Length: 495
Image 1 (cartoon, rainbow, N blue to C red):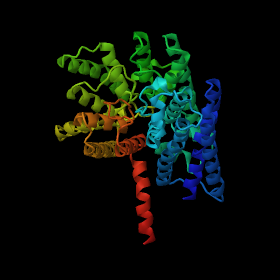
Image 2: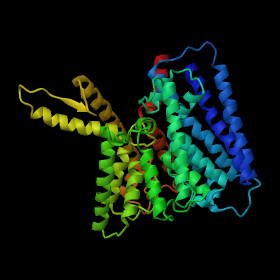
Image 3: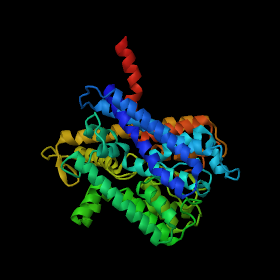
Image 4: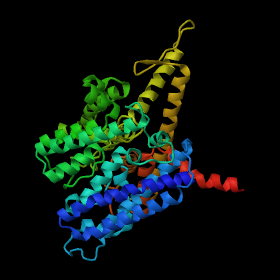
């Protein structure tokens, strides 16, 4: 337990450093009413973080237990957004706030809305309680983007690169849903990830500026785009921009859905073929092109004449789990919404900033079906061959991968079904079952596209449900289940 608390103390330094980094934005935007909220956040997170770190730092050996790492990750990802909600809540309730501020900011006087926004940001989901993004103060716009940018690459990746956790770093790295190495050591891997992330973030900002965004919009959209987060600072997300901006955003969303190992091969070794060299990235391009045509067909059959570029944009946003939007999906028919729901559940490539079950697991399950049929048709003198990513696997290894993918897919669907039951219980007016399914899938897979259910007027139970779905989905379920089982295990041992 001391190991877990010590590492939680390290994690709590992250909101504090983020808050201090945001102080210049308060000053440059002349929003001095936000200074105290950000200083309070910094003091609270750094103060409690230091207390936990120092009071549990006595004779602690590095823990290599996987359950400890997963519990640490789950608890850390739960606590950090709570601290990140402090600046939003205090800014909305600032005593010297001008009376002419918009309803959008005043909605965040409700603590539930602040906590929801912080969880959505840190899990890089993008569902928002803001009515109009452009009416938020610049400081809050920046804070939302910063949360998604840090959350997109992962808090544990940041902590490992800067600090020394007590839990074995590689176990923490796995607990956050990552397992790929692009360096000889984990330290090298984390540094490579950060360099790639910074290069693509800066490149995205300049790309957006070149195609017509203002510097402020380019900065924020560049951060949330490559993080596949989807928070925006403009009204109606990307809908009001022209063709050039939409195409640029599509490119950035696709880059965010590609694994860091592929980016490393491209940037370091100049291997363009890396973008389609393995099965999951081949599936990415097939689903991107085939799914866009299928979605376009669905809309044509429903006599909705949506421009093809907007169809491509919405599909890319769902597949990459980014959540930017150019059109409202609320009026789409059930077939189109169901198709979008399915691709949101699958998500982007493993080892990227995207959410969802991940393409690598999707490919493994599809391969398992193919292997099953081949085994049935196998002649007595023939040998079964298990091939994945151009490599021949032993039967035991193939079974292990299929089992891992199938178990997570089952847990994922179970969580989605549970969320659907709770939201359906609320009997939300004007929303059908497919709208609820769409919203739950969007929250669990960290997408951010919405049918309109996510709204400041949503009952507290609905907000809590979506918050839990975002948290559970970001950690790929198992770490959260281990954390929730901890009191039961402790009680059993005590008896």
